[in-house]
Length: 235
Image (cartoon, rainbow, N blue to C red; front, side, top):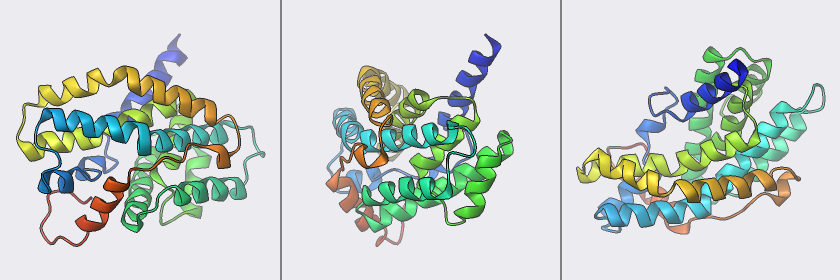
């Protein structure tokens, strides 16, 4: 029972906004959405989050689950080539150069923090071999494995993070009651579970078969964001 609790605590730590992995400094496109007037109120936030969850959120959850599955394989099965292939799949599913740069920066920050919390030779190897950073979902999957979690844990954690980041940013940008943002996340709970289940099942196969949905508006906003001089969020 204690081991089960430890796994749950590890996942909670990784998705907690207070876990120092840099996510709080990003809006995942929400800052541009608010600036453009695309998102103006809590209804717009929820619609945006729902769309992201079933597109880029599903893709990220699949990559995280696959990363966790790879990390849990017995030594010496997973090779550097396996991780290169998975990271390449993440690259192919991230059409925006700005989004790719952000994903690697967040992946690097996540691994740096996770290595200090959980002793793991795998995390050390990934940090050394990818100094510029693995894509964040892939790094998240490896960190979940180091914390004792499994691919479904990684999938649900990434599904949650894919909407928690933009929802949290929107609440700040629009000056809304934080409780209203929490309500959005609560109402999306069933959808998060559905996305995580679909992603985890896909991760049981080869990386090439992982979900490959994208959110073009989010990608476009990411490119707009890097051209602005004064922003509250890094992305």
